[in-house]
Length: 266
Ligand code: FES
Image (cartoon, rainbow, N blue to C red):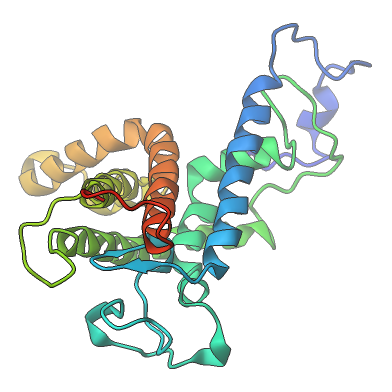
C-alpha cells in the first residue's frame, strides 16, 4: 500500500482536476458488482449464524463447523468435543466465526475489493476518492491487517475440518460408508475450493519459499512454491468461487435439515 499522505510532495504534484475522473468507461461497474456480491455473503452469513437447522446427518453446514458447543446435536459435535460448553447460549457458528471471518477479512484480495467497493478508497484506478487523508495500512486500525499470516495457519485447520466433514458425508445416516448423495458432492466440491483459496494465499506462498536465495538447494520447497504460485495466480477467482461454494453448501444442508429438500439422493 502506498504511504502517500495528504501533505506529501507526491500529492501536491498531482494534476488538479475539477472533475472526479476523466474515465469514460463504466468504471463503477466492478465496485458495484463487488459490493453486491460481498453484501449477499454478509446478509446470508448473518442469517445462517443464527439459524438452528445446521445438521442433517451425515451433513453439517460449513458455517456451523466445527461444532464445539454443548448445544450441538448428537453426532454434530466435532470429535465429540465441546470446549465452549454452552457459552452464554451463543450459536456454535458464532463461536468459531472469527477464524474463517478473520482470514477472509484480512485477505489481500478482499482488502482490495472492500476498500474499493465499500470505502471507495479509491473506487477504481484514476478515479479520485472522497477521503482527503490517507495513511494506508501503516497505523491503527488498518495496521492490524498484518495479522493475516497468522489467520492463514488457523484457516488451514478450518479447511482440514471442512474436508473431514466432506469425508464423513460418505456415510449414511446410520454410519455406514458408501453413501453418495448430492450433499456429499456439494460438501466435497466446497472443501476442494476452500483449499484452493487457502493454499493460494500470499502468506502461504511466502511460507513455502520466501527468502530463499537458491531454489536448486531446496527442491521440495520449490515444488511447493510452484504449486502454490499457480493457485495464487487465480486467487481472486478462488476467493469468489469458495465464497459462493461455502454459501451453497451451507444453504443446501440447512434446507435438507428443514425438510425442504427431501429427494432420495439428497
Ligand atoms: Fe488472500 Fe491470504 S492473501 S487468503
